[in-house]
View 1: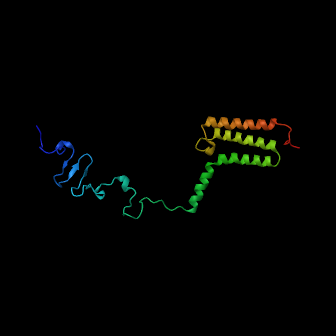
View 2: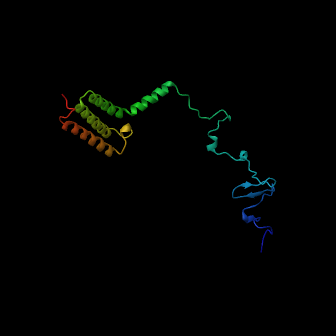
View 3: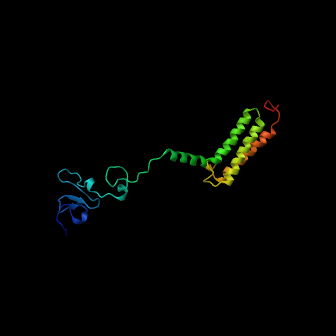
Length: 174
């Protein structure tokens, strides 16, 4: 026994049917309708409700820009941000300053003392990495703390031992 007596897909349980108010076919699953004259959807974009995520970027008046504008930055703001970034990298700057002094010393024909200072720079990096937490170690924190400390200390000791053990040769001090 059939109910509805219509064609296939036009019954109440089929998910498609006719909207009695407008005479258009509707799909309750998708909430869209079709315009019988053009065959296109009748839901207009302007009639769809906007959620809060879409409203947040719109100003209360409409087209003046976003509601939550950040005040314009001043040169003092840029200066403070630069000082903050430099302060965050102070441990690395200290190690690089010692390494620069080592290279200057090497350039002045004192290679043994310069390479020893270079090894001291690596030992300084190890000590700073042990003493400082990860968030304040800056770019010295490359790997896990234990790995960084072992690497910096091992390379520092090797450089120092090599610089102290090599004697004679064309670069010996006069």
